[in-house]
Image (cartoon, helix red, strand yellow):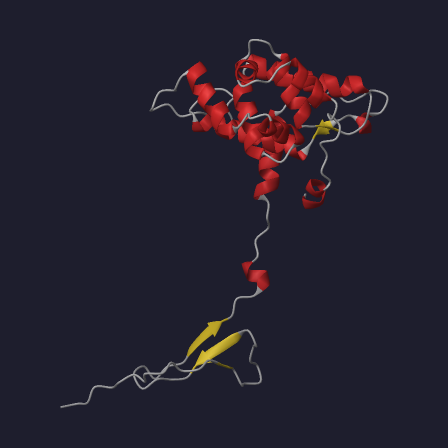
Length: 234
């Protein structure tokens, strides 16, 4: 009866080719008693594994196009204010929140939730310091507007409601009226929501204790919400 070949209990070591035309990126397994063949493996290199990181930029570009943009200044187009990185991210989170609760549009209530989800802006910190949290806003939103149909699916980029559009345009105009350089930031966005009386976002803010006095207090720091680290990352 022929004997059955056995495999060695220890794994063979990998070693590089020793031929004159060998490549250091290749390793060869020694022949085994079972197969009697050589197997060549190629090491992964950084150039073969790395992929360009474009997802973040693509998302930012899509959201930027969804946000209303100020008209270029006729005398100095290069000084036309742009949305800050935090404002863009807050708006992206607003669209996501609208989709989570299956709303067909991105309203002022969704933008308010987006500000709190982003969470690092001065406006978001001010809201939390005054007891206005994401959980409370989400709960008030469902109490005020109700739940969507279970089988409804929101569009990828839910369009803005009229009050939300007006809130963002208000933010742009306030920045332009200041006559100062810089960016349209999240504080402009939050005060824009408050400016739209009877909108869902304004009603929810008022129900959670936000008032004109708090709006005035926040407006004093309206141009302090800048973080250059965002620019270094892009």
